[in-house]
Length: 271
Image (cartoon, rainbow, N blue to C red; front, side, top):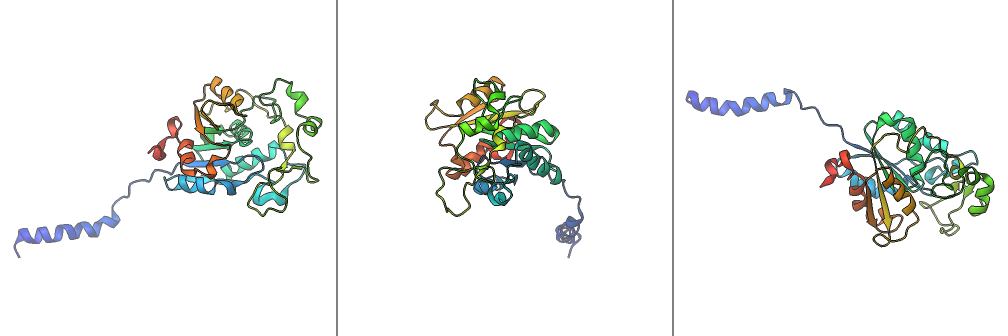
């Protein structure tokens, strides 16, 4: 074998031998999405959306708030908005999550606003999905209403505006037939609807935010038009999705794309 042939033979073999010891390129951390469900729901309802996000390289958390979903056995009159904010803050802290895309659906908008107030340094983006966008001192029953929040954020007001509560302090989902097996919507803690949120400034606390409004028809009437307008006035980009209030059940792929389509977090899911 000539010297040249020996070189051609051993060169690839040498590369194969040293390749395992070569310095590996540092991996880019997977973007993280945390989804906060709405009233009467649970993290179980977001399984398919989570799969759609994970298939695009995202790490996804979908915590269930205290007293709901698989945690329904913890329902009590003591559960309030502060409890649910703490639920999500503790997920971020104990899982050591940073640069989080935090999504809040419906009532979950109250929760993510409170989370941004407490740990803005852990968040990269807020996504309000057909959700409440509260100002300081507002509770769920007061958002978007002309009355003084102090008159609406009370047990007396709740008794007038809401259906009869259960003995455990939960508002039953009127659309679920008695005896329906889970996973399904369950009674929601009434105190979460009447506790005013405490903010030091505008909702979002400086964290970049976007808003998704779902409407049955383009530009049509919707219960969340008032909060979409509020988001627009705050400078949040607002995106319209044609569908009902829970479109993630029928179109998890489309909703996953929307969640990561705002500004700096478009990342790997923009394709």
